[in-house]
Length: 189
Image (cartoon, rainbow, N blue to C red; front, side, top):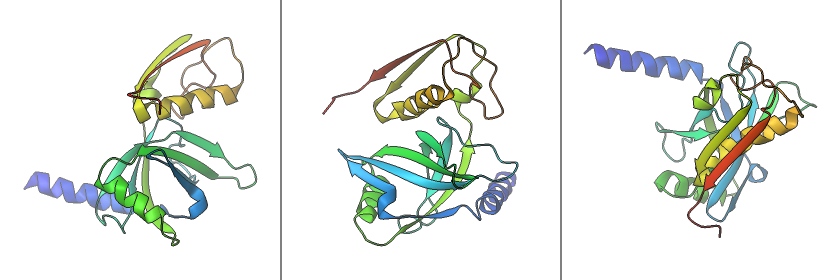
């Protein structure tokens, strides 16, 4: 019984936490290419919330697909819009592999916007980096997308010959001196 009470308290807290995190995905916000959906979500930064960064996890809920089901996705890239402070484009990539992603792909073929609720961001192991000069990242298939986003993030920071401790977002405030990416994939085409 206590477990059931904790479950419903958790669900109530998550409902309250995500109540305003609804966005509409329009035809220009996604593309489907070679069995991979690339999705750009409009993200409004909330005061006091963890800033969203590549490598973090967000949960998406699409009521037209499954009203009570959320699916986790790694953030592939984050682009801040200088013309609209506090608004960000969060990019996700995921393969069309299961029932949910196939259903999402079918929704993209419709002219109607797709209503999406996002929960998060949540830190991952990428955010627990320590002081280091060399970083080795290993990823496979579409699981490498957050690593590529992190590489783009470091590239945007500019050149630096030293590393610093993680900043408030949990990622390096400056890029490492050297970075190696090992990416494994079944096929390239």
